[in-house]
Length: 280
Image 1 (cartoon, helix red, strand yellow):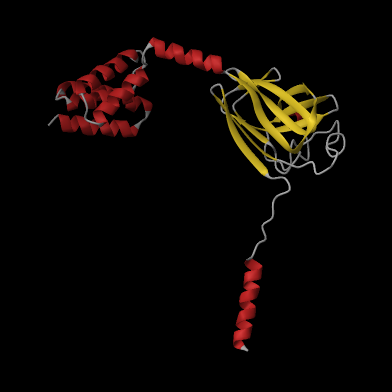
Image 2 (cartoon, one colour):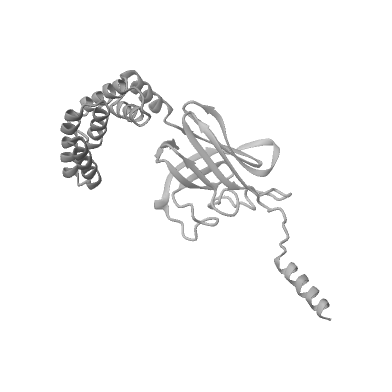
């Protein structure tokens, strides 16, 4: 009898813990596409047609649609972009659509926390709107699909397809601005930060101190109008490493003075300790 009861309890425990896994009716999807130099990511759920009439019925005309199923469809840009003639800051946005038989009004909404459409629509959260014509396709797309198509260096098309409907919304990315800035920076030569980083690396790795000194001196020269106590700190360490203790102490005192003015107690202490050590 005890064995029978134990078996029943075990069976009951197994049945409580067991979970049946079944496919989701609107499976989730996520993809990332590089457009020019900009990363664009999309997360959404993909409902299926299943023999239903979609637009004008399941998805009513003239009403805001969640653009998929379940949680908000979300698009993320790591750069500022332009869509519908409006500049949009880098970040994540929900995509909502107001469809008609002829056009779609595609909206980027700066609140992605809703399940479906917001209970209370807030027009102030719409950061950009783009109107696009509806194209009727000769074939059927069974599952709702979002893609990024027709890529160029300067932009791409955000594409939506379901049933026989196909809509594209062009957007632009700042490739030219970023590339031009990169070219100008490289052609102008290394900046103070580049010289500082190179010098610090050579010091930390015990490499050529003559080169480290040349680079840190260049960094200090380039920032002489607005001296930086952390740059001077590295310069003093490099000089000390080369045996130039008197110069290192002088530079460390400059660094300490600037650090005190900036309220940086850590650099004040580090410089004091080094001055004490180098003065022995």
